[in-house]
Length: 119
Image (cartoon, rainbow, N blue to C red; front, top):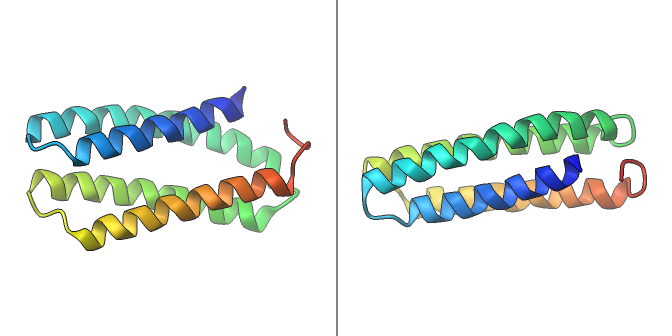
């Protein structure tokens, strides 16, 4: 149940970020920023719960995923701020994409490493 909420929140966040960063209007971008912050809230709550379940089995990977997740949220915030200022750069988008991919890879690695322990 919690894992489904966590995965759904990531999907929600991904859709909101893509939609928000592709808008031309600052007002529309702001709407998606607010909606993405709802996703953060669910991600952080479910992520903390899930990390308590995985920490004893793979503490380093759990810690790495947490750090990457928080860093990715920070990059999303910076990307939205730059978008509102009309200074969104391709380098920032590349860094954000890399952060998302690394966080997702760590999450799936935790799942496959500890499969059956918390499902």
